[in-house]
Image 1 (cartoon, rainbow, N blue to C red):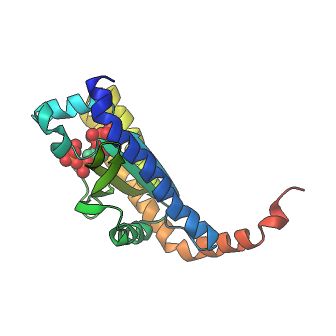
Image 2 (image 1 turned 90 degrees about the vertical axis):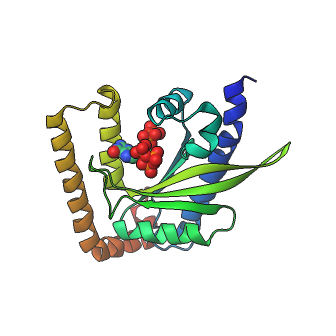
Amino acid sequence: MNHWDQFLAPYKQAVEELKVKLRGMRGQFAEEHVHSPIEFVTGRVKPVASILVKANLKNIPLDKLETEIQDIAGLRMMCQFVDDIQTVVQLLRKRNDFRIVEERNYISHKKPSGYRSYHVVIEYPVQTINGEKKILAEIQIRTLAMNFWATIEHSLNYKYQGQIPEEIKKRLQAAAEAAFRLDEQMSQIRGEIQEAQVYFTKNREAYELP
Ligand code: 0O2
């Protein structure tokens, strides 16, 4: 095993375990036939190249990566509605399989780029054959609209290597506001959407093909 594989092994294990645990929360809502505040969950270990770029940008020495880069293990929880985000955060606060070390609310305090999301940094104990190892992981909680915007902006950032032209930046900021208005409008008609979903779930058999 090379040095990076060894370093990343507990992060990989943590992402796999947390994907199962957080998806399990969604499954429990589904079993109870109630609206799930969680739409879907993804997870990834930050690629070595991105770790090195971030360390370089932030002047983080390589022996401080564990404590200074909080998102080497990254999880994302997507929600239908803005209100669901707080419900999910409260569920995370109640868990006792990890400890929350920091919360960053980029929804009430959006980033200058237009980015919105709620970040929860956790300390997660990974059980290894050499004992327990505590690692940091970042859980990003966002609506589908916030995720749509962030995904597009992220790929443009990659394409322009972090130097998005001013004109496109402005259009992205406007698009972020449009996505936020969409979230607000969806919240307003939430009651009606949920009624339709309950109706559809109850009458699913009638819709299914033989
Ligand atoms: P990747 O490729 O997703 O791993 P900083 O990176 O300095 O802004 P910090 O301290 O690392 O901030 O923490 P922060 O901002 O809470 O979390 C950084 C992560 O949030 C990013 O990871 C992105 O996933 C996401 N993020 C933050 N700002 C933006 C933004 O303007 N646009 C998009 N699309 N995502 C954002 P990485 O390492 O940048 O990237």
